[in-house]
Length: 388
Image (cartoon, rainbow, N blue to C red; front, top):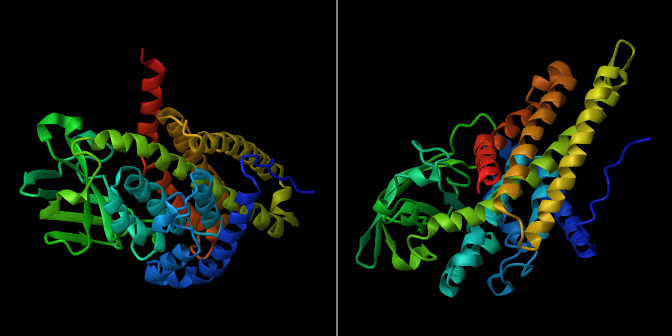
């Protein structure tokens, strides 16, 4: 008799049908390709085109631009969950980078002309998107960014560099966070769209990461890059406020992706422990292992319940920054705990890259770092708790 997770009541029949579509796509287009992609350390761009063709990109973008037109975050959440469940966290996070990091800015802030130029090809999978925030010398401190864009006739001249940019080595459309009024601090930050091929724009990557090999992370360099006024998203010098609003969705997306990834790892560990024998019995029959599994099952269920509530709040437009931070830091730390125990349960085989547990171990480590570190998340929560 197996223990099934509690039913997730936040989804309806329409969501279930969409989930079946995404799951079938993942089994058809992701699972068979993973070995080939891993050998070349890159995702075939055709994957994004095929994802766009069946409506997995831009689920909440307007239909007139090729999106799903669903004002419902749950559809985007399903895409991330099912890609994680298919077996590769890096593939899922590459899509999350487009659906939940890049497109919301263009959809919420873009003019009709900007949406036609960028949102439409992103929804089709003809273009790949990225957002460039982090810099080599500033890390999580967005207020201290050094990239600048000085006013110039008809636009701005961008100078600076960015690092750890998800999809950076593949991206055609990149939202760059830069200071257009350095003297104004946070009130002088703007969002500028850099397009592939612009003079003065170069990149280095994919970066040689420990894990997430399929996530095309890159360093970007801007040397006197001219950004026309029509490539400014929203109002100039209002970028910091835009970032704070959209980081809520990014952090929730990371949280729900970690939930799906750790649940898969946990189930695979149970299956391995049932089949593996030691001292004449299944590894899962040892009380110590059963206790570990019981603890993890409980924590995963509790975390899933909280994340589901956050997904519902986000769908209804009510999720705040602090609760998103709670979801992000708790689930990603739990993700590390689950994969650590999965490796231990596998014994020596858990340290071999041919086993999924080892690759999960390497891939999951970044989860507590990107999108805001655990420490930054706790600082956000702590400030809210102690503010008057």
